[in-house]
Structures are given as C-alpha cells and as structure tokens.
Length: 258
Image (cartoon, rainbow, N blue to C red):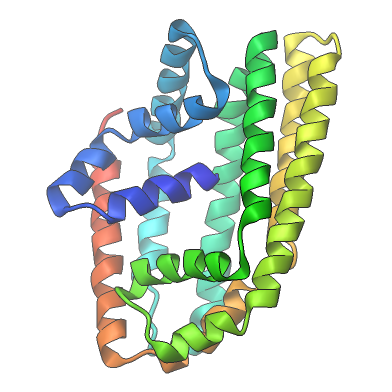
C-alpha cells in the first residue's frame, strides 16, 4: 500500500480544487500507479480500474471510521498517541490486505511472461534506488512526510530525526531484504505451472507475509512521542488545519461514486 502514500502525498501538495479533483479521480490515479509496475494491456487495465472503483466504493464505511480516528487526534493529549497510532496502523493493515487480496492478486496472477519479466525488472530497479540512498536522503524523505502534517518542522524536530539516521538506515536495509525476498518468491512462483486460482492463493499468502514483515521493528510511534512535546503552538495549529483538510477529502471520497 505504498501506492496510497504516494497518492496522498501528491494530493496534499496541490491546491484545494485540484485536491478534490484528484480524489474524484482516485480510481484512475491508483490504476495508473499500479500499472506502472504491471504494464497491463488495454482490456486488463480497464478491469483493474473497475476493480479499484469497486474497492473504493465498498471501502467507504471504513473511510468514515478513518475520519473519526483522525478527528479524535489531540496533540495536547500526547498520552493518547499510542492508542491513536494503533488505530491508524490497524486501519492501514486492514485496507492494505484488502486492496492486495481484492485488486492486486488477481491482476498479478494473470500476467503473461513478458509482463512477469517487466514486473521483476521494475522491482529490481527500485531495489537499486533504495541501495543508493544516503542517510541524509532518508532523513529528508521522512522530513517531507512530517512537513505534510505540521507545514514545516523546526530545528528541535530536525535534531530528533537526524538522531535516528542509524534507525532509518537499518529500516532501509530491512526493507531491501524484504523486497529481495519478494522478488525471488515472485520469480519462483512465475516459473511454476499453476492454475490461476492456485497462483492467486499463493500470492495472497506471499503478499500478506511481505506486508506483515514491513511493520516489524517500526519506531514511528517512538519518534512521534519524542517530536510532539517539541511542537510549537503554530505547528499544532497547522496539524489541526491539515487534519481537517484530510477529513474533508475523505468525506468527499465517501460521497464520490467510482
């Protein structure tokens, strides 16, 4: 579900009208992001977009739950951060697994030989980019995500993030190892002669394992707990503004028929 993060980042970096337009066309945006990896043919892409539209429509009750979770976050009550974070993480895990099971698996299981080769090459190229990233670049990437929440982080928060360079590097190493294992598992799976249904079942297990491993050793909550007490009143006000904007976009999503 890294794709959802990319979509969210691109949506939040645009103007108000453009953001609503992006949400209105979330099915197309997600389909094009997925297709960058899968290289589907025209009819396959149409099926992907249809599947994503169905997924977005059926996920609307969960999206309403997410708006409640975000709306309840109060930075003046840092003792509630663990519960707030657990609720957000639980939502992410559930929606990621459902998107994988109901959208991605079917499309991956039906890739032809050329598409399988292209997917493996894409994963390998992405792995090479991860390998080349410096500690400073990793911190900057995290900084950008925090800026989305607080408009702009200041020196105390930058110092906290810079102190976590070893952690960010270890996470990148672990991510690279997971992706390498996934690449090898996909390669082995593609080499076997399996019925489509069997391939889908194997893919579901494989992708669930990959996503579960991604959460292990995560220190995001710990970093948030260190950062929140250093926030200025202006940054807390910015968070409320940005949270309200995200809620508005989620409500717009809930009203949109895909």
